[in-house]
Length: 150
Image 1 (cartoon, rainbow, N blue to C red):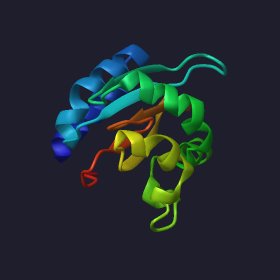
Image 2 (cartoon, rainbow, N blue to C red):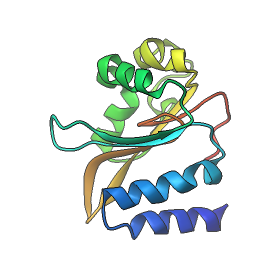
Image 3 (cartoon, rainbow, N blue to C red):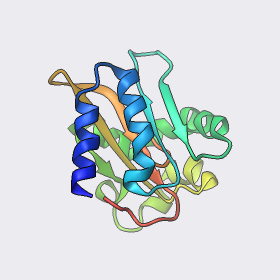
Image 4 (cartoon, helix red, strand yellow):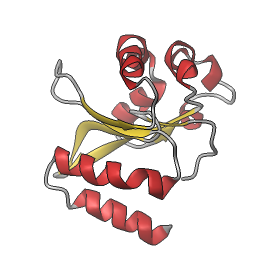
């Protein structure tokens, strides 16, 4: 797995733009991490509609609408990533057992069977972009009923 992760991260690092990052990541994530649902959610400037590519999520438009309407504003993992510029899993940010009590889980993720969430920033040109990679929903990376593999 180390070599394959290295090649994945190297491919992302060599990408020239957001489109290329999205293509390289989306083609490889399911295989590398063994997840059923994943995506990349690229925030633009304030007020711009995010660019996204999502795989394996049934009724994806309803999920994205739900997240944008009620999920993003209560997403503790996203808040952590934006504050610390570091990847996070819900277990890092919430107390034990806190995920299923969290507003994000109750308002949005539970309905789509997103049992875990992991989110990470994409850093380019020595600066943090307000862009997030997510696996198995995500911005945000959620793993549906699987053990976290990383």
